[in-house]
Image (tube, rainbow, N blue to C red):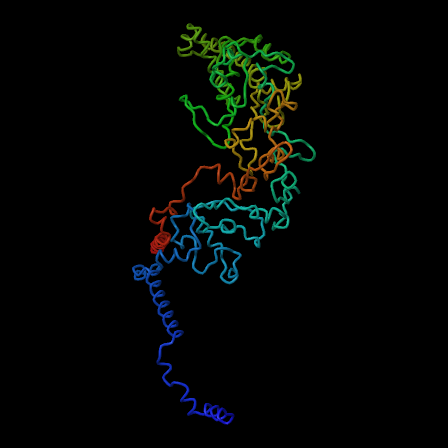
Length: 578
């Protein structure tokens, strides 16, 4: 048995033995693995061929245009564009440049360079001013794609950015700046979230060098007095009734009876619509209130007029600042008056008064008017008559100017004055001293003064976006308590700034949390809720402006960037040919 096994094993190791054991035509017979490889190769080849046919637009290929079909572009996309850019879902060339990175942080940026070329495509439609030019170039935030990412779905917001887009610099602004900025407070250099401790107080209400902020305007206004019933002075009695409102009565409570005392509210002056000349109204700005204007909001109670026959007695009564507002109104009755246009400077008003009083005198003296209409003979009685008439007119103009500029119920009640050389100011805060009044009367006589512009800020937070419309359900007093007459810190000075601070805002704009007094927070509090990276004034406050004529496109060119580029090339060649 042992010899037999040894012989068989020895025979298998010879060539003849292996020939008997191994079939020589094995490679001609079907094999499962080989068949699978062949089938897979064939399938891949067919798929590749179909994909090539589907991906190539042969008509464009023949014309030398972009050969990729819309299906190929859609297949290679990272996702749907937002609905703002949905028209370019299959037009990659609208944003992408061949062999150019769309973000500066890509690995190949250093090899090919110029990621800013993509900005040019963005700014074709989104023309806007550059921002943060003092940031180090290594931050790469001046590229549009550094913050705005696409291909994240139809409903994705390109401007709803995460806080890290802002805090990457603002959490350590001193380190991110290319050059130091001495105008920034220390609190402005380290901001990482919107809280009382991590965000600086609003600049409008921030103390500067230990001093409380002051209203920069030159308009004298007492909120507490106007919000009191019947315009009562502190400790005084109400006296002003609805019967005293001469115009725009519907604005101040037209359903009230004439004998009721006037009670103003915030919305009587702070409105979202403006009255038009035809009696209608127009929405001005959904975020802010219409600027308070004399002819729309003040003239109903503060009529600006002078008597048709001003005298020294009336002028002195109007200048009596020792009387209360009620006594001053009663002491200087002016049954027949001349309306004075608001907003004119004294030099223009002097001309208007001279012309008006001259006509008024002639209208009551027909004989003088008839004689003055005859050709003047030099010398003659007409010249003497004209001289006397001029003296009378000058006297009336002088008394009228004293009523306007020194009176308690006219221009000086709200405005201050400045000399034409800018060295003297009058009525900035209170009544004039005898020396100041003498100097002011001299300036009136020589016409060397002007009304100081009120310069009331139209936007108290120019670096932020705020909407009163979004907060319309909240009582005004919750944010502007000093405007309420019963408040402990009610405003009696025009220098008061009655804006709320951060501590008031974080009651709503903060993460939601439950407290012993109830839940607070829960409203959005991210950076972009209030701030815009680009210049707010240019991007929001100004109306859209059309592009330059040479940059305007037809609808076809607008929707087809390749077509627009061809058009630009044709224009360039044509211009070069000229």
